[in-house]
Length: 392
Image 1 (cartoon, rainbow, N blue to C red):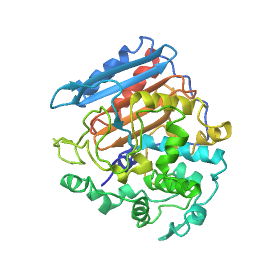
Image 2 (tube, rainbow, N blue to C red):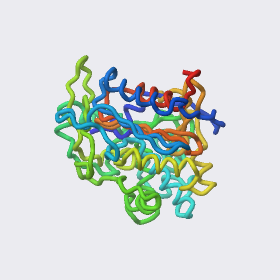
Image 3 (cartoon, one colour):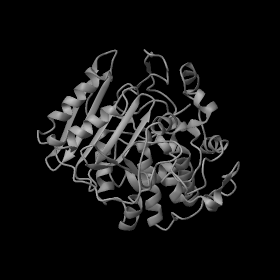
Image 4 (tube, rainbow, N blue to C red):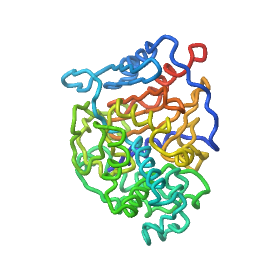
């Protein structure tokens, strides 16, 4: 099985592109001069013209909070999208995982320059890999060279079409996921390039568990969810259902047909994504989390600087154009020149974007409960909210 952005998500985002270098001063992101009417139009267009089943967006800025939606949570009943719905956020999970690691660094439990071999002796070895040469920092900024297990040919097959239904309740351990990745040789030596890889974040979470003696989920709760009062955000174990009120998650299951069948992929065991892409959240909780993260209210100053120090992302496999990757966050420069920060994710039936100004005071969080609309939907939303009319 595959997934944000998770095994499918990792593949989806790996097929997009990121560009980069050192931390740059972003252009100011301007509030939409017409309020959020342009964002609502972009939401409507995503459904009417783009064919998305449903979409939501929440904006937070100096004027307060605004919520907009279009389309359906459930296409069978016609139930409309609404606020406070829980959904799978895919690889936006990586921002949560990196925050846990960095808070442990601040506590002195581990270091960014610690090697994988120090914490997980003998695990990353052979087939061109040497855990003594790979650091925690390289895991978090995707410069380790470790292959993305989601792109393993045999593993990927298990998440396509009818095979997804046969495998959607399968349980994977973190060790299994890592070994699937390591069965494929590295494309470059550690630190020499950028390669978006879910395997990196599985290894990072395994290190968290080794350093603390607690589960990654427990540390996520202690260090992030409880301090920020993210009451609607959680990391599932092997449970297939989403706990609270949620939209159905609709997927083409990687069909290559011109008119692919749409399947309900809401229920699945996301152990295949774990710390790389399995978190469930809401637009409101994502607003609170990224507002605190970007605004420097979650991490100490030293770790904040580390998180937002970025690397070039032009590697052997392209990623999202116009972006740079830090530690669990990335920047995205829009055509109008505004540079936004945050993370995004894709998994079966769900695409999520959470981006905003570098200080976290102006944010847009959005989710589509279908996986075929592409990034253009979010580009339209971000442009509507953050680009002055004259720059569009």
